Image (tube, rainbow, N blue to C red):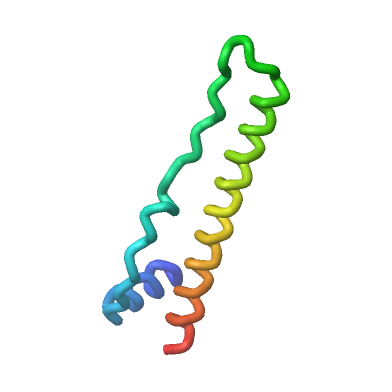
Length: 74
């Protein structure tokens, strides 16, 4: 009940959140497996995809933390 009251109060306060950057909604596809290519190249491309996904996740956390900081300063 406390949580619901808090949510209702925040809604009534009229806090307008900024739009989420488009790239933070993006899903990173797996690296394609091409017949005849060495498996190490697939692993290398998969690691690059994972690095991009991790970087995007980091930006998401920073974006959220910034919003929390700004709303907490009210």
